[in-house]
Length: 397
Image (spheres, rainbow, N blue to C red):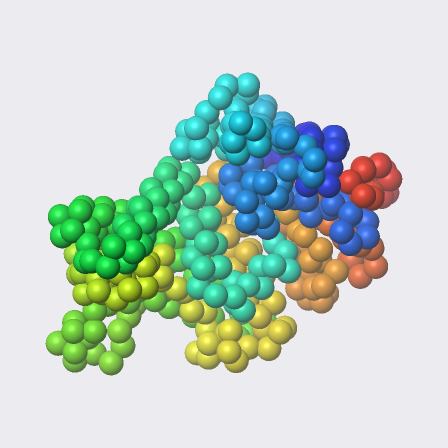
């Protein structure tokens, strides 16, 4: 898979820019805050239909403009396709998605477009240092890349939580308990869809871990061992009845549990916390509250790992993602490296080099070329970015 052309109009700090890409290695070079990362964000936006950096679509539209266009032409398994996204402010904030000129819904996009990218940036350190949401979102993104149809499940779950929260806020404002039949409808939906989501997350994590473990062992010189726990909270009364000290189900237990049994647990959790949820006006239990805890040599990475260990862990996780996505696509996805190579030491750069094949298209942003291994630069197409304007520098021989 490779992108042949990227076009953006009124996107962030770009008025009108178009970039023809080399099928293997591309470097975007320029000072900070010139728009290098914005181009990678445009690609990710069409891959995931979600920006990793903007809270609202309004933030993606150039100041003073009423709409923005992102268009990508790419080749996958020998077939050329064009995907575009138009964001408009008037008459209201809206999106229009098109595949080969045909308007499609977000749910349809996964079945019609195979545009897929794996990104690695300094922001990915949030997988270790950030809160549970960072890890949940990443796991869901990997899930959708491996199983595009699950985009609808993730979206459906989010909408159910939003509607249930709306009902809880309304009950709080009225100073009354929720109508039993009305809240039960939402509880059943949340439990059913939530159980499906948790099972899918657990299956993806089970696939990711062995590869990530191998990656971390290699980059650490056999000194570090990775483990992870998916935290799914169970009812305290169940913990007490079972005589267990831990109020979480382990990954192996989640994988072995039937989906309907998991849905029942989620439903009972919701019922138990109903009164507290009304007071706090939000849904306090469910997959949107789950977490993944990564550990190095059995010590929680967020609390005990050094910065170097945390970088190694994130690199191991992202390379595991890259491998799984490549297997699912039957060809390499796009690899987006945002100002990260120059910050990796030579051993970590070397590991990344080993797994980035000559047929994998890579886009790299950087402020300078110092610190890059020479192998990364040979044959690379270099484009300078300055205040949202692109200019070709050429290829390095």
